Image 1 (cartoon, rainbow, N blue to C red):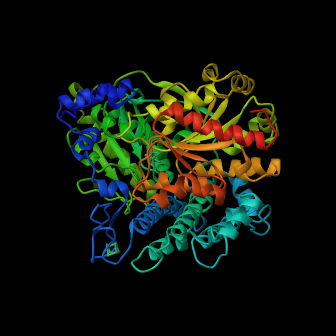
Image 2: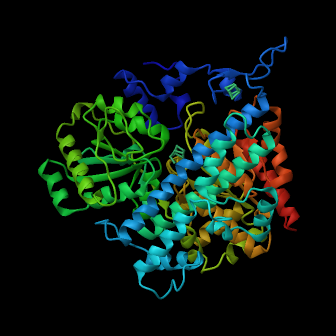
Image 3: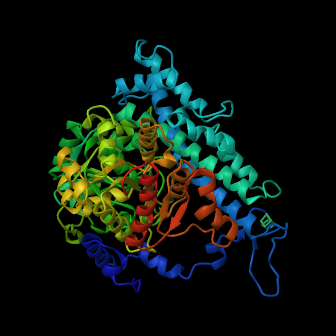
Length: 629
Ligand code: SF4
Ligand code: MSK
């Protein structure tokens, strides 16, 4: 299968290029090949001017000279259709993150009820702290499980309709909360905002683009300050709060002599238990009996990030590496939960001995081995899955194995707790470095890969450009693997940073790009912004911060971008959402939101120009704070 694009134009990486050549030789199509088949994409859909919300349609809006097709059958124009489509897109992303968060509540509840063998509360201090923060009575003194039970209730309540605002919203500065209230953006209930977005976009409801976008922002905020934040905090409580540790990254982390189990998806509830099973002596012995030297659990995408942050497992790859990981011929099992798992993996796994195992009823794949994992049976089912991987190892064809390159070392584990601990318990030293101009600002680079962009060229290009300008980078999601492979997650990368940032990094022994976790862990960045703003007595929209997703593809990434903007963080995207068919919606996204929430989107494919745009915002905000540029 030849995509027509040379490998070195498809990806930045040697491991990917080698595997793309192997895939081609073995006639295995990849996302790049299918991208070529899908190009050019439907113009109406690209512009966002297709509506399929009822069966009087589907309708397409065209800017035709004869004036025809300016309205859908119901009379909706391009602005309304684009805004509705964007709103539903955001609802999809917010639903994904937040339903993930709900799974963590259910797991904590199962622990409380004694129905989750193998799970426990690993960070009791954090449980008590978070419970106290959210108003649970006597969180410091009551029995652990009683406190956990009350915390479960508080978190469940955030998904409903009876609150006027989400519990974690108090982490946002007062001025921001008041602004949201004035704008009608205060998220009340996570499921409520998502359901309301679907309601408003039904035919004959909200037909005002500004109103639709305001609710889209409210829905996104329910994700960032709600579903995602619950996901992060409860994951820390159940599996431990990340602290700095070392690991390795790229396809070289797969081992020829070991049973390789790749965990893929997002939710640590499954992957943590797979790791626990793989650490059991009986299963390790079973692996040795099968002729393997060890059981090697490695990560893909965000569940990989979760295990990397907390357990230091090696990271095999990000989004566009998932197919190529199987092409190594050394992946004995892919264990998937949900989100960002390409359906193509089933077909590619079938070309090898690889067992593709799905574990969630929300993530079924025809042709996969489905072993459903719930908190009550996870221990037993994950042992079964590890056993399956061991059996698959015995069927591996050594002649088809090709593990490219050597792993690259990385440092991970920069939760806010870890950052504050490194600073002596207060953000003050960090702010001193900002005031002195050593660190000029912070940019969170987050998100995915997209075969429309050379893999990781935007992620790495922007990170390098920003640190060179003394702007510290916070990385999550699939940017982690990119930054790691480029050597940016090691303290030695301080040498690639500007003089101010380099000096701070060397003094603290940290890299200029800090790995803060998975996609839901962007909530850590929100919390950090809230902390810094409160410490300075300003709003988040006054801070010298920015966000970027250079290679985003998913609904979830769009939701992240919108909650960042609505929180006051200027946000760069490497490619636009499908909104360009409406001048009104596009104008609001890139400009109009500035007047409302103090931040807006920027779209720029070139990473150096993107760095210019982000730097300009940081300079402007520094000057408003009375700091040097
Ligand atoms: Fe067409 Fe209106 Fe139905 Fe959309 S809601 S498909 S624009 S008739
Ligand atoms: S996994 S949403 S490709 S970052 Fe979170 Fe990666 Fe983007 Fe999925």
